[in-house]
Each structure stands twice: as structure tokens, then as C-alpha cells.
Length: 428
Image (cartoon, rainbow, N blue to C red; front, top):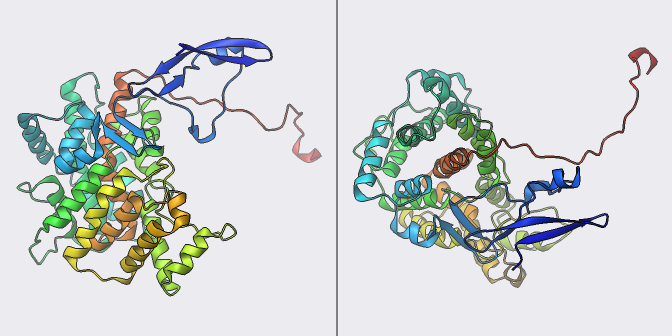
């Protein structure tokens, strides 16, 4: 294979080096395109064909349905590791030893509190506030309580920041939920594991004991693992570009949370449940809505099927489908909305229209079902996603800073008015 690619513009040829990844991905390095051609740039709305960086964290092949964290397949990781092992792997590059893993857990537990003044910030939000707006604000507010900047080249400094964020985020999430639910704000129990503590902090009632359900713990653990990183998606790219200005870790993560909020990104599982509720309100006829989804002239969109990146079955959906089945079976839930979801799933897996187009249920479809079954409100779904994505955001921010990547500054093609004279207001 040649080491360069040639671009011809107005009869003049320019050679640019090719970059090859470890999984044989090929990219044209156009870093010097504008300088070499005296002003020519590329345009790629949505950056669908543009590599913004070189990264050693996550490999994704949408055509083949492959997802790997630091070289480990998502199937193996989800089956054998817990969420904090995966977090350590993504952030620091290798699976932790037994000693490192134990220390990581203990250090995170030691940071699982926030300044009491944070309660005042939460209390200032009206109950009508969306949880994603609250959690984004609270994450940014952590900067005020931890004003020193992170020295990314100091392993000790970076490690402290990692355990601080991983320790405090579940508290902020639980308090956000409890504020909306009208429950008192309280801390968890450091004798519990990370995921068990999240569930207890969220759902323990002030007048009773919280009983852990292993099926729910395992399902949430897997959901967090499956959401931990997903290459250069919208929120991850946001974290990297905000961090490229040398904004702090908390501010960069807060920006990522805001990006995740959108219904086309982290809000997709919320959109799934809202769709199911609309179908239920219309009588619950799944066949009718499958027909609407196939009608090109019908504006209805079947949420939770197919994926922007995966052109085959979402590998995460294969894993979490079993958890969804286990949760529904264990809890014995026969809620109409979940029955509608099961009906849509079965029809889509058998309908030739969906099979031919590989419009299989994706991870958002199943995660919404699990969260609903757990009793998590629809507007909290994306907040749960944010807990899972936190290690990936930290890992990407750290990698970007260690590699001293330049500040993000995309170009544009201007399509506005050409030069014109200003007209004073009384002459217009």
C-alpha cells in the first residue's frame, strides 16, 4: 500500500501522508492541507468521515458489530469484570491487579461524599428542573469546591481526581433523584459495592431498610459497563474539545453531560419509553406502529431500533437483552408498556423489512426497559447513562491532555452575504 494519498485541485497535485491504525484503519493526514493549497479545506458536516484524534482507548467497527475497550471485547469485559475494573482499564490502560483494584475501590469510597453546601445548590432548583440540567450544574459546581487544577502529568494528581469524580458522581445522581422524588438527601454505605451503593442511595426510604436485589445489581453493573466508552461520539468529542482549551476536568465533564442530554445521544433511551407510552395511549397496537415505521410518508420514527454507527447488531444489545429478560422475570412485571416493548422487539426480529435493513433493537431500547422496571423515572435515564460514561470521558480527557493535543478550532465554508456597505438606521 502506498504511504501517501494524492489530491488534485485545479490540475495541481498534492501528496498527503496516510496514517494506519493498529486495526488497519486508514486515514489521510490533512494537517497541512490548508497551508499547502493556500486556503483549501475539507468540509464534513457532523464529522462523519473525519478523525479528530488518534486514540488507544476504544475500538469500534460498526459494519462488523465490534466494540473493544483497550483491546478487550465488550462481551468478555461485561461477562468477567465489574464496572470499576472497567473504569480503571479505560483510564489507566490496563486491568488493575488485585492490589490496585482493592485500593481503587477503597479510595473511591473515601471520596463518596460532597461538601454540605452542595445541598444548598440542589435545594435552589425547582422540582420541575430536568435532572440532566441539575447534574450538569452540580458537576460544574464541583470546581468551586476543588479549585486546584489537575496536573495530568502527575500520576498522583490524576489518580486523586479520578477517584474524587467516581466517588462523588453517584452522590450527586442520587441526590438529584431524591430531590425530584421529595426524599431526604443522604449518603450511602461504604460497606457496599459501588453499584449496590448507587441503588441504595437512590431508593432507600427514610423509614425502612433497603434490600439489595442481585439481579438488579448485575443488570445495572452491565449497563454501566456497556455505556463506559464509545469512541468519538458527541459527548466524548465535546469533553475533548472543551478540555483542549485547558479547561478543568470537572468543567469538561459538565460540558459532556450537557451534550449527552440531547435525544439523539444519551436521551435516546428516554425517547424509547416516551414512544412506548404514546403507543400505549393510542391503544397499544404494535402491528399498527410497525406499519407506520415502514411507511416512508409517515413521520413516525421507531425509537431504539438500528444505530447510527452499527450497521449490524449492536454488540451491547446482545449482552443487555439477557439482563432485561432476567430483570422482568425476577420482578414479575407485567406492565403494559413493557409488554408493548416485548411485542415490538419480537416483531422487528421476525419482520423481513427490519431484518433486511438490520434494524435490530439497540442498547437504548433494552436499557430503557431495564430502568423502567427498576423504578427509575424516565427523565433520570440519561443521568444513569452519565454515570456509566464517566470513565470514558475521564480517559479521553486524560489522553488528550497527555498527548498535548492543540486547541480544537474547526474551519468553515462561509455562505453568507459578500461585502456590502453599512446603511445608517434612518436610511433603511
